[in-house]
Length: 574
Image (tube, rainbow, N blue to C red; front, side, top):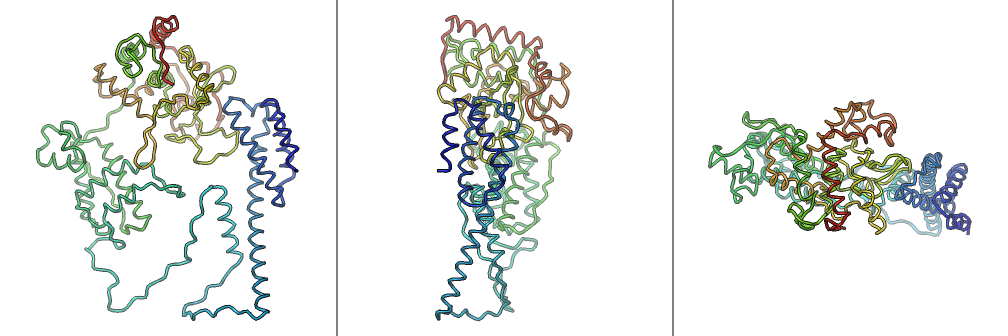
């Protein structure tokens, strides 16, 4: 009955502003009263906490800037949640203590009535002192962690493993090769299967990058003959280290001999290097050394390998240096935008063939957003309709992992970003708006669709990690082939270099440049306003229009105007 008053008040609120006013007033009242002292009050506050979270979600989805209308709400919300968590821990502690005391009283009463516990077997070891307060603390911590992490509690592990006595004259382990580590004798192939097994909801179990490590660990298994992990000597690690630079690039190798790294290695060993090329040092250091180190670190952490981690260092003088990526030339960019994808294509599937259909697909928008914002392809694929926001002067993409002014969120709800610096806001170039990006967003929201590109499929690796760049990357590889763009340093990421070049040419400050591109900056760059850019800087960025963008506008808007006039048939992809 205590909840009916404020619940009715929330139901009758006609809009988000009235709802926010009611919530802020009650938040302030709760915070002023401090942490709840009993379970009834805590239950009421938890119910109210749920309603505030619903309001924050609705406000974010609708682009309602509640922090500007209610500037005290974010801080009140944080204090309110902290009070609830503190009360939850205190009440849980008192509950456990009451249960313990009740059990002790019952045991005492039973003893007075003649009951006696069964005698314990004699122990030769030193008895451990039982500390009920320490036990209560552990139980309370487990209860709070269960609620915060929302995980099923694991079974209680024994306090300490039994120590087997050592019998003189009897070896406890079979003899091992000199220099080998001691421990379990699992073979590398068995450990690789465990290494790649999905972790489920186990806490602090990082799976990222394990799928990429599979190929090089399998190479080590094939090269070394799948030895037991703890029989790997320093000499074997050195042999593996020296073999890695001799894995050739798969180019010029028949498919039947290039399915695994070891097949490629043996092909080069038996056929020679006359028609083969070596790998870049970046591939060896990042993918091969990094993958093996990740596997060995996991084995050490899981106590499946007790030897030291080998330091890889072998590089062949003939291995290739990494190739720096360059920006698009103006003519290369115009050549791309004159293709049927942007001017009139055959149908939804054959967007690179000339036809009478205008298809603004995820590939169409993906290329244009990358060019005009400098965003990474994987960032474009994850865009939601609610990520397009406005401060009533500029439109911008909000790529922050979450809105900090709305309070904390669970780790599982954060946006999947490449780096911490990737969380940022990016002004939307007017050309994207002229081409109908806002209309697309509105149509999808009217249908109840959250994603801006629902047809953009995510690629899920064996280790469970997601790759959002796959559709656009494949399309770029095809486009590069049909456009006969043979320049080796021209990649899809050249769109980011292009935006960086435009920013540099217009004299944009380095700190703003880093924010737009999502690059890590120095310590000074991590301080300052975390929201939308300064209006003057935002206006300057939106006004970026070198001569090539003017040519882009002519090509793209000509096709859009033809479609609007009926000269091209518009096909929807969602």
